[in-house]
Length: 446
Image (cartoon, rainbow, N blue to C red; front, side, top):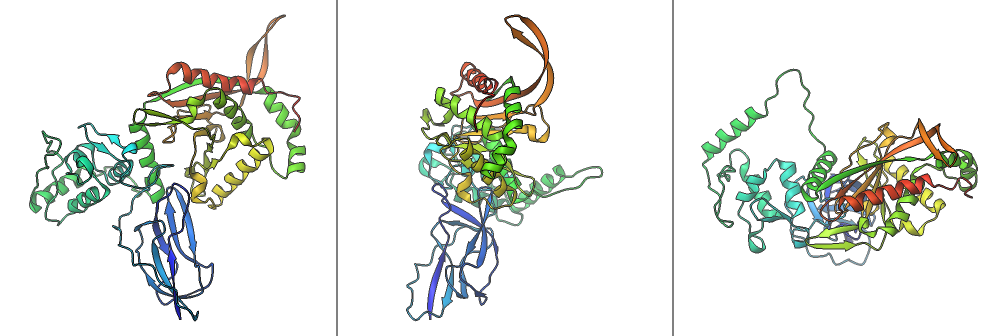
């Protein structure tokens, strides 16, 4: 007999931990090689962990909702092998706490000073701490009052989880969020159990709803999306610019070649890879749009990894990433776009599929919108939205004079981080994308 350790698998280069969603097997259950043992979640992608051996589940080391570091032993399987396998040291349990994982492209560590966010009181908070605070309803004033045990008094994951635990009714004490310390390191006041219950009662009154309402608890993914959106607004100074493009040449060209393209390549040709082509060409001209901010440093990304918003079976949106998109031709881009979109619809995306994006494209026209004001996908500095393509009468300027014609028109909008992208650069880039689309070669070969 031998014991084989089942470890939390590596899910991507920047993913450091995952949340246990569901155990399909329990101690004593038989399991076959590659049979699903549990489901896990990282960011917004759920994955299955298969068994690495055939045998019987001897021990499960983590509970549902536990956050587990990559490479940690999560279960042990007893097999019929003759040679024993030395088990890895038993891991230290991590705090069980259901929470949305960190924002896109950010590892879930609590010691990343470069990812810190400045609080109103002069203290710094990591994105993970802010995510937990947002999902648990912890206000910024409460954060300012939590004594930090981290470097230079910073609030760590352990600190905020302990604070949330202490807030629960019946605990011995909670920190009073109304107390604003006069010194950065001053500890918040402690109130009694009776006072805590009174505050809880007051809070429940504040959340009383009048009228005929239906109350729906956010699921894990919706909480993650909500936290990601709030964190983006808190991090970046959002500005949105708008323009329009005459995409008649592109529309007529696609209509003419799409059947032949599908017959030859086995892929449907949508507008998305054509939009991505235009974005790539403009990023090469204006590389600051393909960057991120680290404190007072601007990090220009040499790789062009384009994120594209796609729908999940639940109706939520996710942003899978086309890695090194600038190295792909139209056929390659089309295959990547279709594969990622299909995997999103069928819940087959892998965690690494959503990592490493440097610029995001979202097609709000898919839902019938003419334009939108998208929220930046952190840690990127810009996101481009393309609206629905509509036929409209427009003025055509020629050497022979002006005329009115029916053209295929589309609005484009781009939100960008005004900390480093000023209005001139943002508008110049957006108009450059529009010009690329307008100057589409109608005689292009596929």
